[in-house]
Length: 194
Length: 432
Image (cartoon, rainbow over all chains, first blue to last red; front, side, top):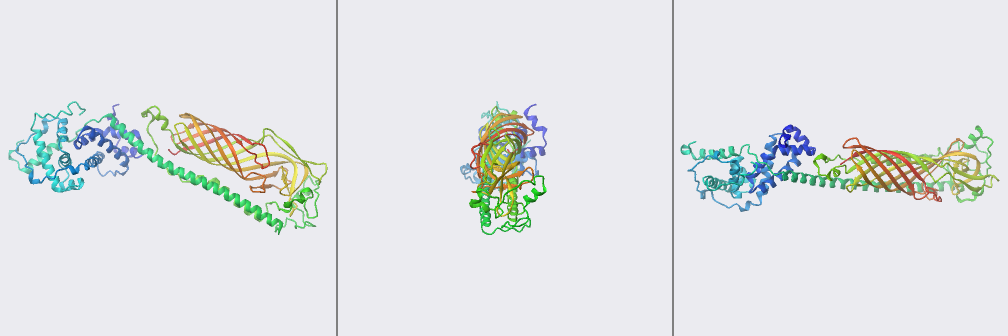
């Protein structure tokens, strides 16, 4: 039986009980079930695949150490994803000082051209997101993908709300530019497992 | 979708929705090395936890050892003080409230327990010569301690001592059981997932065990007969004692063990040891303050007057509390395990009791102390094999044949080396 199907044999409650008791087989089954989804999350926040794997590793260790605190108030995968995001934030926290202080009004939004992302492969999209500067990438992920408000992002990342907005606007502009540059192929994951 | 007619906010929403949808249910396979790294981190974290737990248990073990030693020392001092107290009482003002005991003067008083027994028993013809103070006459009348009263079952002081001894022994026996051992998480990595070599490491690393053993106790290589000289009070009657070649030995123990290397382990704990041996003797001792005679297999010059009697059987029981420390090597460590152990044991002498099998003589009991013929502390070498069957992850049962060799005689003036060959059962609970 393939490893990815082993995880389907357990319910969330069985995962929680088994992992909390330190059963390594159940821990591995949980990992097998969610590692691909979480790897995609980590790839969005990380600057490289290696960094994403570091975040994934650290995140899962935190999951196994703290799974006894999971109260079932959300889905298990949502809880794990939140841990991955927090781990990514911790990874990037030391880079926060690198975020340039750009005023919101300084960002000239170029919203004239809209493109569909449907024509892009997931690997390309991840490569485009990873090409963003650290601060922009973090705010873009938190605001556009996770749905946090700028106020919440400011609190989480330890930056001002204005900086969060300006970073997001900058991220949007950079993404539009890069999406509209078909010549700049982001083939990093063309031969990857995605 | 035609973005021309949309407002800025709507365009923004479309932008975010596009990205959110693009990454919705996105998956990417990480490298296999990530799980190995996660597993490695978990093992490292668990090892830290194990180390902390082991440190706690080590501290408990150290504290327990110190406690046991202190208890032994306190008991030693207590019994020593008691002996001196009794000595002082015997010399100055022997107090006897028991109507069964005679007046210290010994003149025209009620007969002693012994004499009652003698008169009422089959051996009524036995005559014990007495001195003017009621003491059986002999060369030991001149001994300083001739007037020392020897314990009887009715003596209030002795009863008090016996109760205290009982309490102390109860504490010693129950002490290891009272340690509340916090259950700790086990490493439950399936062995088939482990690389070769780590499977051994997944075996229990810390355990507690209780057990009992029984076997053969030999005070020497063979039974001996010793002539202790002639008692002048009964000319021509040579005082002698001899014991059988083998007695019995029973012990119960509680231990904590820990694997210190892949195959090496260390274990220690506390053992209650009882050794019983049959004697024949024609020696009797008597108290000066009461006309009681006691079974004596050895020359009790420090205690009382002795005389000879016709040969009678004695059962001698030695009791020890010992603290063994052993190191072991695991030859097999699977469902069935085999290990060999070797170590030393500090045996704290508790007391010896002598019982006349015929019932004519009073029982005699002696604890440690400067006036005791027994060593307070003996050292013994231990060697054993242990054949273990793992009942489950946490429980295992072992059969333990072993040998105990005492480096010194139990008697202070003895030259023999008692040894025990026994077989025990050990029930083990694996803590980690």
